[in-house]
Length: 221
Image 1 (cartoon, rainbow, N blue to C red):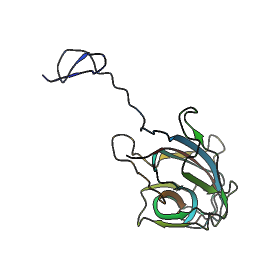
Image 2 (image 1 turned 120 degrees about the horizontal axis):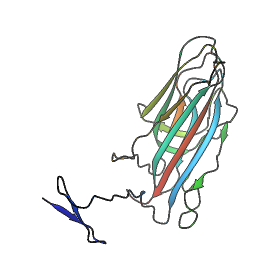
Image 3 (image 1 turned 90 degrees about the vertical axis):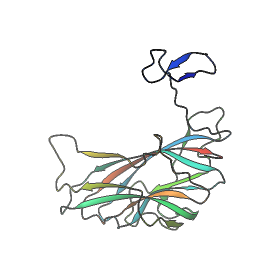
């Protein structure tokens, strides 16, 4: 039976049915060199008259390094009852030709490095924007970007005509990216990025959206 020998400890590990030492595996984060790993969490509202295809959140790579998204978790909570039953939809798009972020109805959030020593200051080369906290029907505007022909992830919600009073309001939680478990992640070059849009025009309900985004900045992947 084949064996693997540790380069440091010299411990022999059995493979398959071999009765020997168990494997000890430590998963390492993406090497970042002089750059770093970062995280940003934001919350904003979708208003009851949110325009279809309104841009709600975006990240643009402004630098020559690569941005590797490692988490994009969205929590969606309806806050006002709908006037008619229907479906809501948030779509995540990859962007190219992203030479300028939106400038109208935007907020620039604060990001944090995951380590103080040895990592470049946040947000590295990432330019993150989200729609104003109180929500604007038109979403963010003023940017220069090209969307892929189709979304890379979709999150749907069904309108509630009345909000629950006997228990918690149900919320949706979704990982819009699942590219960190052995699959190839997005590797965003300069002037590339991601954005979240509200695809379906709202008809009465308002809601709250939280976007939890983590990423690595590195020179190669």
